[in-house]
Every structure is written in C-alpha cells, then in structure tokens.
Image (tube, rainbow, N blue to C red):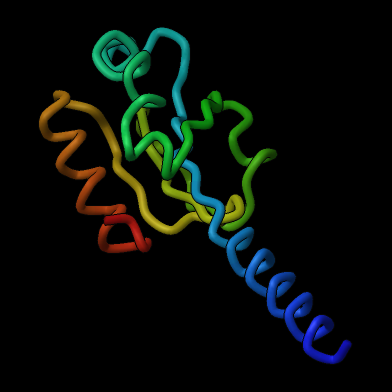
Length: 118
C-alpha cells in the first residue's frame, strides 16, 4: 500500500511539474499593421503545424487589450511583437517582423535559450 501511495504522489508531482511548463507564443498585433499582415500571409497558417508551434502554441492578442490577458509583461510598443510566455508570464520577445527566415531563426534561438526546446 505504501508503495502505491508513493507512486501516486510521484505521478501527481510529475504532472504538476509538467503543467508548469506551459509555453505560448503571444502574437500582439493591431489593425492596419502592415508587418502584421505580411506575417499573417507568410507564417500564420503554417505556424501551428511546426514543431515550434506545437511546443509554444500561438495566442493572438490585440495591442489594445493584451495586458488584461497576461501578467508580468513589459509594455508593447511595436507590432507585431511575439512574446514567449510560461503560464502567461513573459520570458522573452521578438519585436517586429522583416521576413520569414529571420523570424524562424530568432524564434528557434529564443526557444532553445529560454526553454527545454530541442
């Protein structure tokens, strides 16, 4: 009985630890943003299908209300801004968008540097 209880406690602790590693890539945008429109055309449809998109699912927020959805976030000045979060707390960010190659490269570096992404 004691072994079963210890096993259950370990499983619960593992699940809790895993749940604390919930990452998202928050995409802060605004209507009329030219670079947001380009990102939407080049990346938005494929992002969820990529390893990065599965590891850090995209959460789209408008610049006018992003602060109500997130805690511990520095102000967003430019759009698009991509904020890597862990349980809604900012870890790192990419400001602006100037092309898909640079975006994917910066995202990979950020994920590898700030998370357990491989």
